[in-house]
Length: 409
Image (cartoon, rainbow, N blue to C red; front, side, top):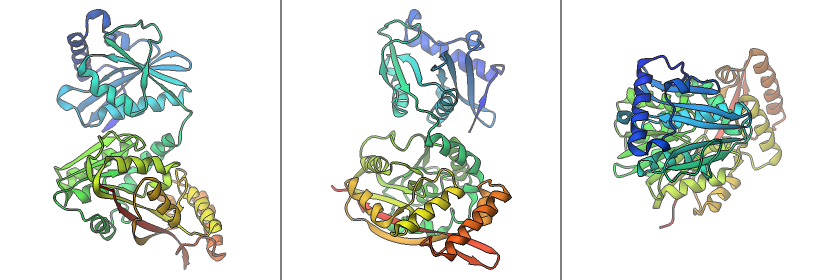
């Protein structure tokens, strides 16, 4: 799936807008229909996007400027025959990115009050929108629901989306990401079987979810980056898997009912998350009682100096890295989320540093500067990992801990 700025010239777009307006008039009286027609969408101050998968139009959405600090979401629509493909979420993410880049402090919307609008309202709620009163030129109307979201400046999430959009190809094909032994370890640690329904949180290119799908009854992956979800769909198609679904969304507010899954996993994600406790609590919430929660992530030295140096240097590799934790803090996270003492397995990932820097898009000059700092830390034994110098190569080593615990019944 790809999102593009649209000039409203294509017949498929015109047909979708006609479907949208017709449906709005079916559900609300004429005076309560605020959907924009083709002519109004071409007005100054309105930006319009469409979502496509090949030649197929999956949805549309628009951003209208109300004032220099306030925007409005308009014309959100997916074709009736093509819903639950993630297009609505992908477009809303793009609208939020644009609103933040313009410096808006608030984003609002109007939707219908009819029961048929509840799925749309749930989508907006999952992004943090809350009910509000009429705004702009709207008046109170029993057929309308008004919602608003206070926007912070470009966030850590926005940096993650930007970085992982650039990295999607490399991430999807990295031998260490698709390593069969590491993936099989997750199956063993969770005891995955044909009776399980699994969820992979911050699923990236879908490698873990697809590996579980080869064993479990159904697998779901959720990620905040549209480009990663697109790669995941491609991996699913290549593997011929029919029991996988993908959701685009914020892992801090998982869009699933309580106790929906028998296995909930997250791999190589927690070091990107500034506040991992709420995310782990969400994972526990959607896990069925008596079922399994697994986190696999970087596990740094208990020595604060070595942990700090590792985190400092890893930020030079990946600007979205926030903080890798020592094992004691990983275990504390599980306790804070209401889980028991986790079972622990370990392995490591070794990357030739210059090739890693190249894959991450760093210039040769920046890569060499980082390598010099890493080599100095290795010589001074300040990383607490198996990072090492092998001839002309600098090997940057990531110690991984796999923590598994069962939710109380």
